[in-house]
Amino acid sequence: MILLSSDRYHPVKRALGQIATAEVRIKRQAEETTKKEESFEKELCKDKDAGEWFRLVAGEGDNCRDVIQCTSSGLQAIRCPAGLYFDIEKQTCDWKDAVKNCKFKNKERKVKPLLITDEPLCQDGFLACGDGNCIERGLFCNGEKDCTDGSDENSCGFDRTRLMQPFAVILRHWRVGFSSSLHLNDRL
Image (cartoon, rainbow, N blue to C red; front, side, top):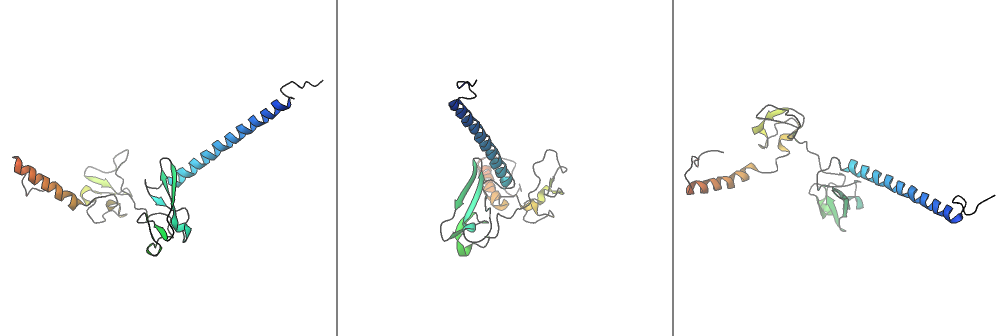
C-alpha cells in the first residue's frame, strides 16, 4: 500500500526537499568559492605594500593599462584611459610613449632592514640589515649603502638635512626667548 500523503512520496514535499538540497549545495559551493577567492587574494597581496598598484599580466596594450591594488575591502582595479599606460614606478597613468615598464608586473622590491623584530638582533647602537648583519646605527640613512644588500638606505623616507634645518631654526628662536644651556654652535 502506497501513502501519497507521506513526506517521502508527496510530490510537492519531495520537490521542496530537492530545492532545499540544491540550496544547501549552492550555498556550500558559494562558501568554497569565497574561501578560494580570499585565499587567492591573500596569496596575491602577501608581498605588496599598502596602496601599491601592480599588473596581473605584463605586456603592451590593455595589459599595460590595467592594474590592481590590494585594499582592506578586497582587490581594486583601474584601467588607464585610452592613449595612456600605467607607469609601475611612478604609480600613475602616463602617455604611452613615456611608459617604458609595461613588461614588469610590479615595482622593484627593495630589501628592507630588520628594524622590528621579536628579539633584538644587534647589540646597542647597531641596527640589522635585511640580511641580518648588524651595522652602526649612524650608518643608516646616511646616503651611502653600508649593508651588503643596501637595505640601510631603503627605509629612510626623509632627507635628514631638510629635517634638521627647520629644527635648528626653532632652537635658535627658542634660545633667543629663553635662557638655556644650548648654544647655536651645538650639534644635535
